[in-house]
Length: 252
Length: 52
Image (tube, rainbow over all chains, first blue to last red; front, side, top):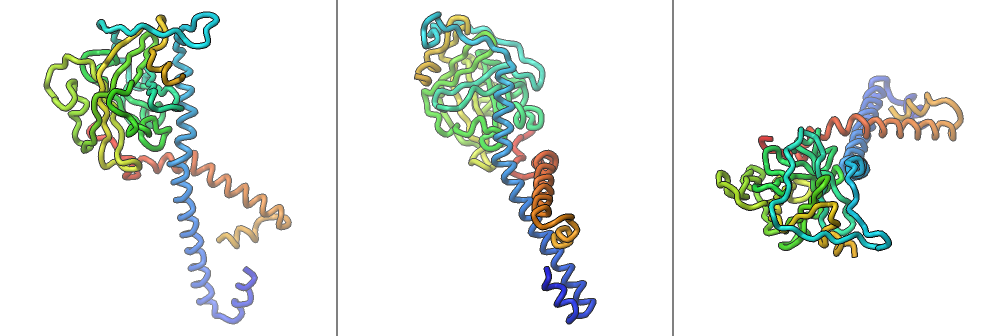
């Protein structure tokens, strides 16, 4: 900046002002660029850091009783899968966390909270997975439909494309495990809301099956399409009877 | 602009460097806490819900 003083004596006052204005404008533009870079860092990294921490706290705050481990045994007791009618919770109030999701295929991913509603500000950005209001509850006849971010805000469904037909999706409420099996995956337009119909893809049809549907954005970092995973309930078990074998196989 | 700020910071150069770093950190912290969360919903890639 010492060069400015030398130049000031040679050039006129008007030219001096113009150069100063251009200099300030240039610095403002550089600043704007750096702040935009900061926005990317915040959006792509910091929302994950905060989200992972908050969602872990939400899961811990549920106060779910751990599944029993026999005294002296290193591994939890294996629950006997049941195929009769499972208990189904009533739909809770918007923003209430009522379940968790664990996917054995996603090794290393923590249990994610599932909360009522798919509003971004109150559920998806802060609580992880959201349950489409009005769709079936876990274990219910119909379609238990949930949504979550694929990138940013702890990205619960980041690895959705790894899911294959036959993979287990394990939902837990306070007292019950619901083990779903992936039956199909598809990529649809955001307007194709029939994927969360009681019978997926067939709105208006009365359901007889207990389905699950995961929806998230596709491709990554875009909202152009939706990646959708369908599944059906394969078994359920009371938490007091142990842990589903699907989860233990993943841990072992 | 930055030259003006630099000239108006008190103390010798090492002190000024420290103060400048604190100022930059404060601006970034304010952005992370208030500005970016407020801007995020306005971004097209965050407009993900249909008719909900």
